[in-house]
Length: 113
Ligand code: SF4
Ligand code: SF4
Image 1: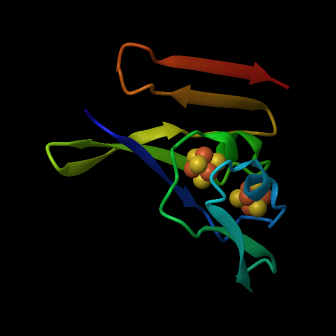
Image 2: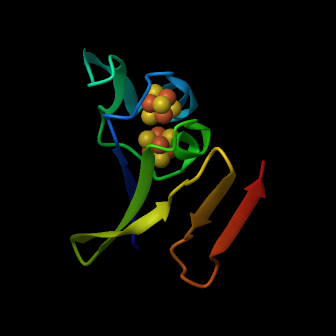
């Protein structure tokens, strides 16, 4: 049976170190760095290889700097899939696309604020 795991990519230069993603992660995969970025904030980093791709962190990030990926293991090889959650234009709308890995159950939600 295929096992699903996730990973995140964080734009560390625009992260403001609010720590919301750290609190929201059920796996305790995220922490704030000791270093600071170009705008003077400790930024979020992935510190454990146990991300499940649950998307919580991307949903709570007020600066939309987290992209979540899921990978699936087939026949001993792990394949990284396309991003499953990208949040854009937070000041005007939130757009989230979640791929449940079945390809047939994709949902797109948009909230205008
Ligand atoms: S996708 Fe889920 S498990 Fe992975 S870092 Fe974000 S909150 Fe944690
Ligand atoms: S929620 Fe976003 S801005 Fe806040 S620490 Fe995490 S990545 Fe940085």
